[in-house]
Length: 150
Image: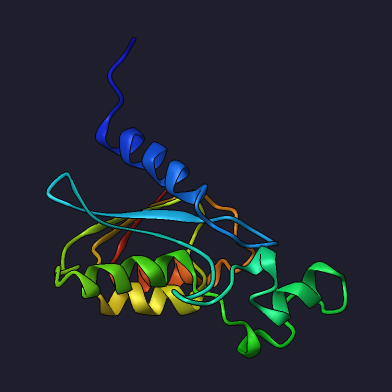
């Protein structure tokens, strides 16, 4: 059996992290890596102490799941946190710098998350292209963040 490259290894781990996501629409997992070591993980879902999405924790997600809302409607009312946001928050919670790190994500970041990744000092993003918001990729590139779609 061939030993996976570092990129393959970290992407496989992001896929495992994704299994913790509790979103009714999309599961996303990501890993923040620095010097070939994992410094934080993140997946999408409700904040700590809030009932999971699948259990009714987010009214917007419930309405979207039932077909009562279209994509993009009432996004401001969603209580869920994106995986990329969670990975930055986890690193901060643990007191770890995200400067010059690499993000491995099972989905490309939306434009809101891209802004946070840029300001968190993340230098490289390795992801799969699955999210409808492709503007995040362009924003990352404009800021000089290396982006690789795998």
